[in-house]
Amino acid sequence: MPAEGGSEVTGGRPGTDGPRTLGIVGAGQLARMMVEAASALGIRTAVLAAGGDDAAAPVAGEVLVGEATDGRSLRSLAALSDVVTFDHEQVDLRLLDDLEREGVQLRPAVETLRVAVDKGEMRERLAAAGLPVPRYEVLGVAGDRGRGPDELAAAIAAFAAQGRWPVVAKAARGGYDGKGVWVLDGEEDARALCEDAVRAGTPLLVETHVDIDLELAVVIARGRDGTSVSWPPVETAQVDGVCREVRYPGRLHPDLADRATDLGREVAAVVGLTGVLAVELFASSGRLLVNEIAARPHNSAHWTIEGAATSQFENHVRAVLGLPLGDTSPVAAHVASVNVFGSTSAGGGDPSAGMSQALAVRGAHVHLYGKQPRPGRKLGHVTVCGDDPADVRARAWAAARALGTPVPFPIEAVVP
Ligand SMILES: Nc1ncnc2c1ncn2[C@@H]1O[C@H](COP(=O)(O)OP(=O)(O)O)[C@@H](O)[C@H]1O
Ligand SMILES: [Mg+2]
Image (cartoon, rainbow, N blue to C red; front, side):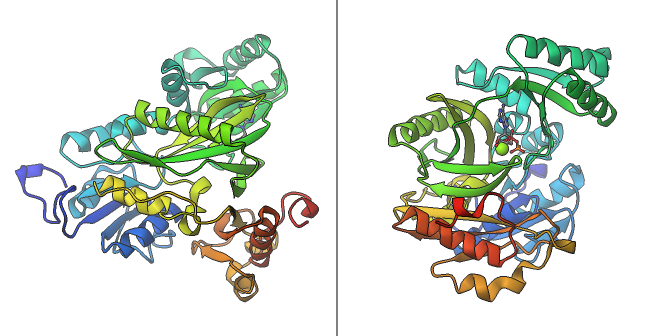
């Protein structure tokens, strides 16, 4: 609640019991699932949506329509809320700094967001803390400091010369689901990318192309008092930079999982987290490297809704409001969570057309986000818990396919 005029909050202070309102900047599927968790606890919600058809708009208590980077909209949201949290990273840090100074309770705080919203800052902060990251160089805003496409491409080539091609270039801000990640095979690729980046004003970094043995993620929840809990790490499967499937425990050796958890907790402490934090990791030749972090609930822990005693969404709500954190233990030996995407048919199909077929799959927990279908757009997910890893995968994929999801790898890799 803003301290403007020194007025007292209306909805009860965080850390005290009583009715409260959680404000959420953004109204995508993460906000929608936060709202569902908050609702079960009797916590009111307000979302700042870009438009009325955003995923969280139909379920939130209050919907304000406005930009996440608009001061008036943010202050209106804060005026309704005891605590303000975030669904995405497309924020204006300077503006949030002002709000924090005005007394708005931002959770996570700007200190954490500063690291989480910028992949360059992320690399710098984690490297400075001695945490393992791929070799990288922050190139800054293309066109900045007089650096045109040629100078930027030369910087990328010099970086590659210290190792080898390919290298990976990334947009420091604004990327998601593989948009903003480019594998560059040589100088020609670098020049083409830099021309586009200069035109679009995209801040870039470049890093080693890691030989990834597997990708994993660990999700931590940290309360306002610094206590933290974590869910067991999971294996994630990305195709073209987009997460398609999450498996608990997947192929993760318990030692690797323990190291990932330790690393996740260190990251949470370094960034001064309150709320939920996801740490995406690469396992490469026995080493763990931090790929990226997200200071919010994350696709790699959607499985916790049915697969763990307390979901990431509930613990995020609890953490940001200063409530005790819940038990993160898995409730089954194996869990598979498969993302639902718009089908390749014109318009992306309607996933709900396959609902009866999907729900006929034993144990399939279907989540549709209510988004307008488009081919390749993430529209939902399906989770299945059980005793047998191949069986939970097969059932989760069967339900996701019934909802129109194209299978991104050979089907025999999924259905034994
Ligand atoms: N340095 C790298 N080396 C090899 N693959 C990478 C590298 N960085 C990213 N990738 C691949 O691209 C995916 C998306 O990259 P990421 O930085 O996580 O972007 P996004 O924000 O879109 O999730 C990763 O999950 C991984 O599969
Ligand atoms: Mg990622």
